Length: 192
Length: 357
Image (cartoon, rainbow over all chains, first blue to last red; front, top):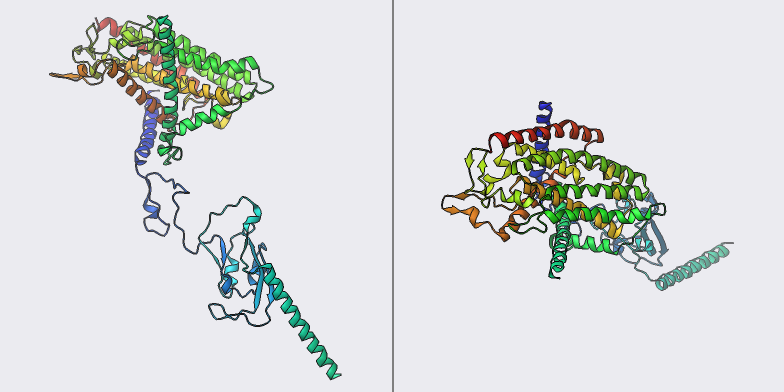
């Protein structure tokens, strides 16, 4: 009985001293340093809370977060849309009548992107699109906190063409196609 | 006429104090628990979250009174009032400083214990009136626990009364310091009437009262339903116990009663065992520390400091120890605390007869 009481007091004292040591350790907070820092796992005492909107843990510049597309470098090859496991990328391309410029790595651009939508609400952050991209124009950025009041706003529109421009290009393409068809038919008729 | 004005003023001042203390305790409880768990606690409302408690109370005030359809309306509405008023009335007999006591009752201690028992009734009313199985279970547990723990607490207190020879809490306070008219002996041998300070406290006048204080402290934790004896509210089992169905201001009153109860039992313990409003600093030769730190202002200061320290320990224990099981709780009360309290009472009698002649 006495042994039991003594044991109870001993264990209570142990617990109380543990909480007390934490209470006094709370005088200092741990520093907000990136996980790459060699002291990251050395901070064992003190307050662990990161006051999120005020403090942020640094993340790598090319973290695996929100997608971003550099449209000037995009050749509208549609590879990213094809590899996407959840089909969150929606691309509509229009063939250009001639080469329309070069990307920063020297690839010739021959297609207009009338539509380049990425539905971030569907995205599962697998990063496959960034791997297949031949010009490395689609990348994952370090932006991870984007919340929208409307689900539609989660569809990011990257295409820099207006609807009129797209229509104009479509007409130009139709015209070219019609001319070519006409030329072809003329050639066929000449043969026969 | 002035007579009644004083009554109203004193009552208002006490109510204001309990309300302010509750807000303060709420904030400090959240902060202490946060620090113990390596968190920060409230940080957004005001600097370091200091206004958090006010924000909470404003939220409470705005909320709707919800009365469940199946509830016993009269009991349900009356219960928070009964709970709070019984605790609040307990403050009437507590001395704050030399000559400063709302009601100097000769049976002060007896009165407090009697009036605190009414809280049990309020809790049972709340649990029964809610017509909710969790509430009823919680209140049944609460009543069983509070009635059981009143026995060791009461007997531990009686052992002090035997030493102090008075139920008047003001008298008990006076007898633990330099203002005493009787002689005081530290551990029963050393005359310390002129020295005062912590040497004259009851727990040092008769060292077995340290054990009595521990018993009283544990029992008082159980009486105000604090962890590790919080099975009546056991959030994880009973979703809050007897106050599940309460909302808004009624819930605020139950909360107020709970925190006032913490302060009240802490203060009773301080008065009976830890010297009440007497200064802990002794007179050392020509350095009359005890004399310099006595008086009305100092009295209020010391009793507040001591009680806050006790409340802090209550909070500290709450965030350390896990909850006891019902049967452990009961066997601990009846098989350990009650016999020890009787032992204390016996030693008190012998001490009074043999040593304090």
